Image 1: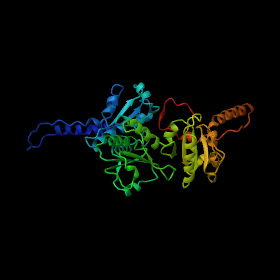
Image 2: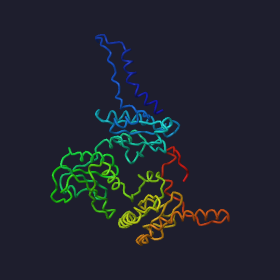
Image 3: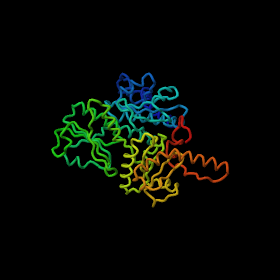
Image 4: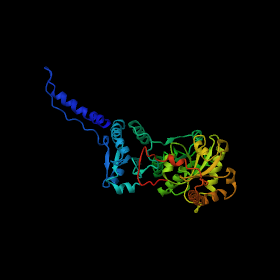
Amino acid sequence: MLLRICLTLLLSPSLLRTMQQQRPPAADAEPSATTAATPPPARASVLQITAANYDSALASHELLLINFYADWCLFSARLTPIFETAAARLAELLPETASVRLARVDCVREEELREKCSITKFPTLRLYYRGHPLRQEYRGQRSVEALVAYVEKQYRSSIKTFNTTEELEAINRKRRSVIGFFENRQQPNAGLFELLAERYKNDCDFYIRVGAKLDNVAYTQRMPTVVFRSDSERTHAADTLFDGSWTSPTELEEWLVKKCVPLVREVDFHNVEEIIEQRLPLLVLFHLPEDVLSVKAYKAIVEMQLSNCTDCGHFNFVTVDGLKFQHSILHMGRTLRDMPIIAIDSLRFMYPYDRFDDMYIPGHLKAFIRNFSDLQRLHKLELKNANEQEGDGRVPPLSTFKHLGPSKHRYTLVGHDEL
């Protein structure tokens, strides 16, 4: 029905012109030549991408929102008319000079392209900025209004400018920020900074100051310079200067990723799907919302003990508001009064850490991580023995985070084994 309405709306101008041409002219009207209709701009339609035009499409658009879909997927079919209407709406709202386009890839016909882009679910909406995908894909509401608002927001520059020391000190310390100081915007270094700022604007806030050095700010004595300011209310880290080479764009980008995508991340219901989709076990800190001291301590211990641990396996290290995820706490047989609580969620079972304060013992948290595989083997053996003896066995609590990944009621999952 929606597709029929959209087609009717698109066709109505031509139908109206036909009716006007067939209507008898007024007696005092003079004949005039019929003018050709102005075709809608190409960007009002969705660009079909194949392996043949993939590279050129990325190179010729500043912003490209790509819908990776499959015709047989119900959710893809529902999105198609919405996506087409959003493309037409954006063509009306954005200036003609905007190099912005909505595009799609048929992943059934373009199997190699699907594998190249690591697509594991349909539909997947991924935004590309100057040929590079943003780290976070679009996971918001699938409506015309939401898609248009998302693209408009990404189109606008996110870099904030400031001039004074007072404005520098007023930067929100609850958020991760990257601050660039440049003598003028014509410097190639300033252009590189702005490019990377747009690429990672969903991970950090970016600020820029152009002009002479600030007398009261020591790190502006050497310019250009870039400073990372951590979310100091949740971590002990101080301001960090980029001390790498400006001649290597990848060096600055790698530094930004390390800072803006920290080892320990705060999880909420907005980003949990993205984290669970990586299918890595979680080391979770459950804490009260006002308890920032345990968060700072946990981050510091994880970074000191686990950041370079080569035999600890692969984990996602996260913190969560225990009030929002209290179901997980109760599921482990703990209460809200027991917080802060550390636990491993393997996405099958949950393994609570005995005591939060034990993490201050050198190597204790690392040993817990290393013993994780032994715990899994032990529980598998206990489950096997329990089945053979028809006993209860000591079954660990089942994972609660497992169910917060990409939903089968929203995506068609490809190549996902049941966890």
